Image 1 (spheres, rainbow over the protein chains, first blue to last red):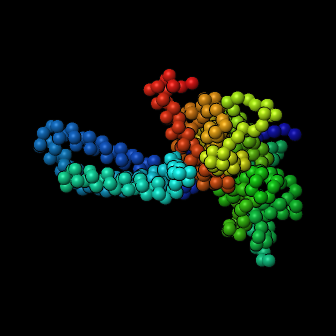
Image 2 (tube, each protein chain N blue to C red; image 1 turned 180 degrees about the horizontal axis):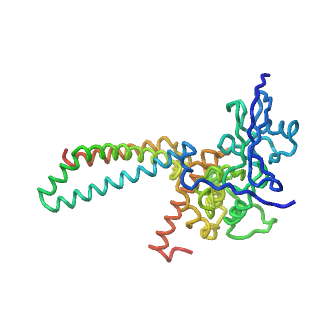
Image 3 (tube, rainbow over the protein chains, first blue to last red; image 1 turned 60 degrees about the vertical axis):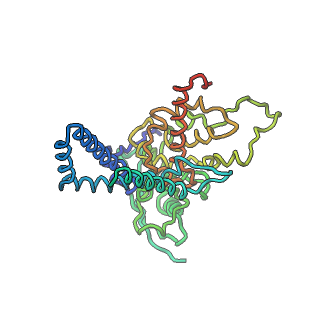
Length: 129
Length: 247
């Protein structure tokens, strides 16, 4: 009797289409791309600010135009999704024990959302809008 | 007891005759309380005695009957036929070479498991007469969930990183490394580090989390790996900032 194990090659490109959990993972990863582009836009804005009022006004006009606004909506949606997915997994990565007892995951997740809202509100106030 | 007729499409591969695996369909009258393993046992006993698969305890303890049922890695002994449509597709675990029919070659996993030294590395070796290495219930609770692993390979089968990167040490082995690293009686963290805290170890994991979804014993390997990443990052900064502290 001879051994001849058969190797079933995985699909290198389309593997993530096979299961919904893989797709959700890819969505989470791709969401970082939108956040990254948004950060680049902000850096361009800062750069234009250093170039004087006219340059900054032009940047604002573009950012608030149809393309800029549409992108901002997408970026916001992905940023919320990104935060949601990562907050959901924080109890796994950072389990807490208080007084010898495991802190329930829901409390760790809620604490992250609380911090998120608090910092967002503080920034909102500091930005003077 | 009601009987429903299921069609089992089972992946068959005979290394002495087949160039590649193919599906063979069996019609099985399944009782309402039958698990997939019962249905496969029926095929073996009544329809086709050439079918090859692994099983033993029938109670999700031995970890032998892992297979992909409708694409999802499960233990056949705790998966009910009634939870599936009439057609059920049964394949060997993904991401492993197929030895024959539903039996996979698990050598790669065994090698990786050995490489993380999944046993107690005590500070000082004791003679048996000197008694046990003592531990409090609180110290045990710290890592107990990670001791529940039955090496069933479902997590490796679900992990896309393992599918794409052969060198990845993988979920179960890394979870067991974490289990011993957390053990108050163990000092083996430094000796496991070379295998665990490297590119083919924890850093190959991109936290898909599928391993924990499919784990039949709620070991949560994904959690173990993320916690090891945090500990390993701490180690790195300790090494850079306070090299004299490192033994």
